Image 1 (cartoon, rainbow, N blue to C red):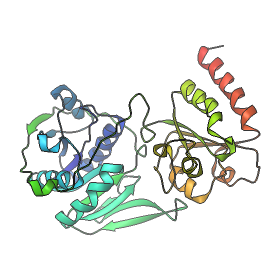
Image 2 (image 1 turned 90 degrees about the horizontal axis):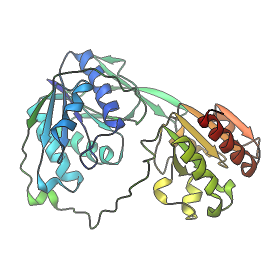
Image 3 (image 1 turned 135 degrees about the horizontal axis):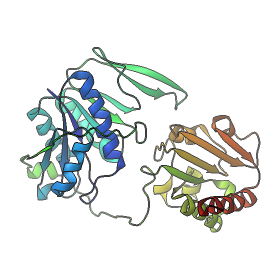
Length: 324
């Protein structure tokens, strides 16, 4: 019996979300008194793999197969399925990101497992197995009991702290047989962005809405993000108007984020937007409308013109960072 964590890598490197996932899995392993095993797919240097032991992984299964160089949910599901069976995994854990959302339902069917997607906390009990999720667009919580022998969880990003727990990690090569039928669906092209902070990884996000009136006014948003070391994002109307790229759209119909600090500028706070950002630790709203719904959800609010407030904040942030 074991706990298996799929540790996704980005061009051979792991990110904070990977260590967060292992920390979460390690706590469950302690609760169930069973080892934590990490699984990675792709070409990852052994020194990088060893770092997984700093967060509780006793063993790392490494799958290196050229057929898996390009992600497809069907082929990756098969690889993870075979690994899960080999180590008798009773709990399999993914990040609640694009790949996790694509693989976990397929794997649930193949393993005849129970799935809880988008969990935020450790199980309150492992016998019975109870996990907590947000419901009603984030307005409430519900506890789910998973009755199947195997449980699959996807963890919301930034919902669990990174906890170091050093283990002497064993790296073990694991091979799978990937047939052509497993590669029946292939991406036609892969577009990668570089030099930008992924909004799902960012600890601080600066977000803009229609209150900014046009794409030409985004300079002050980007300036604030640069000063704070933050990522930039936007509401759905902004993406629909093509003021900003769609990959920056956050909300119920976009990316779900949970940074330590979310600054919403010129965003009214429709329920669909709040559903995607209410996992944030602290939320700040800046809006001219004192009745904007976002103020009810925000921890701090500034009623004022963004074109006056944001430049003033940027100046204050810069002076603070310079120590003056």
